[in-house]
Structure formats: C-alpha cells, structure tokens
Image (cartoon, rainbow, N blue to C red; front, top):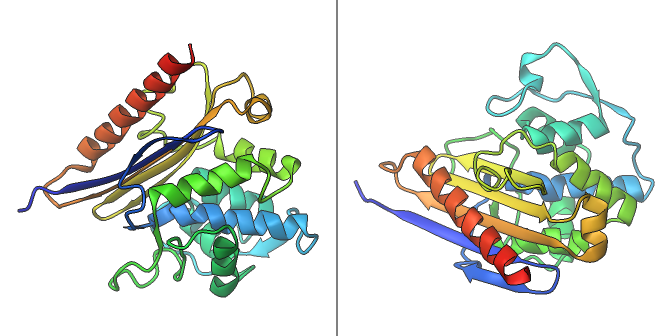
Length: 256
C-alpha cells in the first residue's frame, strides 16, 4: 500500500506563532470539535441560559470512547457531561451536550471566533459509513486556545474552569507523552478515527494555570496527522511525541 503520512503543526506563544507547517491544511476533526462544543455550553452557562448543575437525561448511547455507555446512570449534571466529553472523549456525553444546542448554533459560534475551516455537522459515532463532515486545521485549533487564553471567549473564571477540567485529560500518549516529565501543567485533547491521530494542547509553563495565563507563559501546540493503513497508529503517536518534545525544548532554550 501507499506509505503516506501527512502532518499539520502549529505552535503559538502568547506573543506569536513560533512554528507552522501545513497549519492551514484541513483534516477530519474527529474528537477535537468537542472543544468548541463544550466552550459553547460554558458560554450558555455564562450567559445565564443553563445551569451546570442541571441534570440531563442521556440520549442514545453510542459506542467508541467513553464510559457512559457502560453505566446504568440515566442522568448527569451538565458539568459532568462536559468533563466526560473533554477528559475521556465520551461520545455519548458529547452527543447529549449537542442536544442542548444545535449544529447551526455551534457553527455560528465557531464562525464568530473567526474560524472558517472548523465545523461540526454530525453527532459522534453516528453514520460511520459516510465521509467525515467535521473538520479543522492546526492553526484554527491554536486560535481557539489563543482566544480563550486572552479571555476573548469566556470570562476569566470560566476559562480557568475549562482548563482545569482539560488538565485532567486521560489520553496523554501524544503531545504530553515525553513532556510530562517536566514540571509543567498540560491540558490537551486528542482525536482519533481511522487513519487520523490528532492532539491539541496548552502547556502551562508557570506553577499554576492561572499564573501562566496571567504572565502569558504558555505554549499552544496542535499536531494533526492523516496516515495510510500501513502506518501503525503507535508509530504516528511517537512521531507526534517527538515533534512536541522538540518544539518544547526549542522554546525552553530560547527563553533561558
């Protein structure tokens, strides 16, 4: 078979992009679009339209990532659905959050952030035979975090809430894999479907998330990959880890 691996990378500090490669290349987004989804739900909370303590009945249980599908619990607080969606990429929890909004509203929200190549048009693990309809780019993933860190999306309190949740990520085999030995805080979100392995992260370089944001002491990093069947996912993930470590170490070398 064809030996193909396509990579898109974007690395951004509080000041500027420090590394870009295929950053505007559009990839199927997989679970990365759970980030704007959860941000919109937090925005609706900030606007007083919903309560995070409100309990929501579970929609249809779907396969793939997550644990809700395996439990007998029938309703979850919105805050817990957000947490499940972000830190174990729970598909059922994410689909239930989509019910609190709609695709039009989600995509309008994404467009309001100035992102033209990111969209979500289908629930997760539904209609797996059709081609992907959820898309993003490395640059736009970075932009979401960049705007968030500048408090352009949510207020300071809810921005901290979001990153506090995301820093509890369970899937750390990509960007954090070789960096987590350093005394920093990492908040990341992976995306995996057939032939796709993604990770988008913020590395908080100060002793706390709040301090890092205050001082502008962070690195935003997104690595998107598309690979042919003869590539092992593990090998691709190791490449993502290597690139991440190199970018982190070059940044640390620059600042010292």
